[in-house]
Image 1 (cartoon, rainbow, N blue to C red):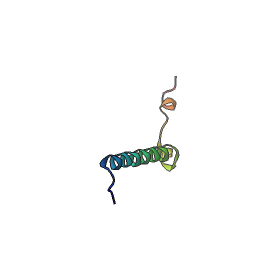
Image 2: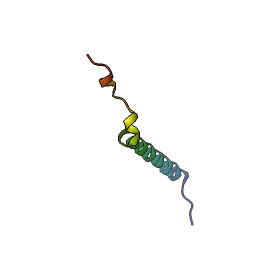
Image 3: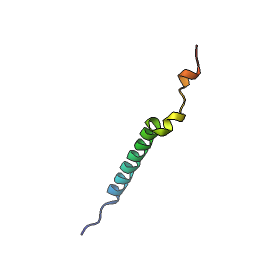
Image 4: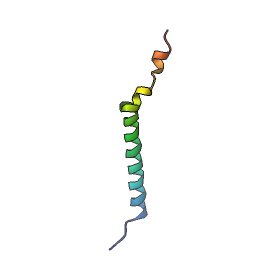
Length: 46
């Protein structure tokens, strides 16, 4: 049986990292940690 190529392994690793970072960003922006975020536009009233 032929082993997978190194290029495929790198591509899958990059895809998993991208999806993981995207999921973490969505969780941080809309999940429970979002209560601690501040809106910079609300902080500077004109």
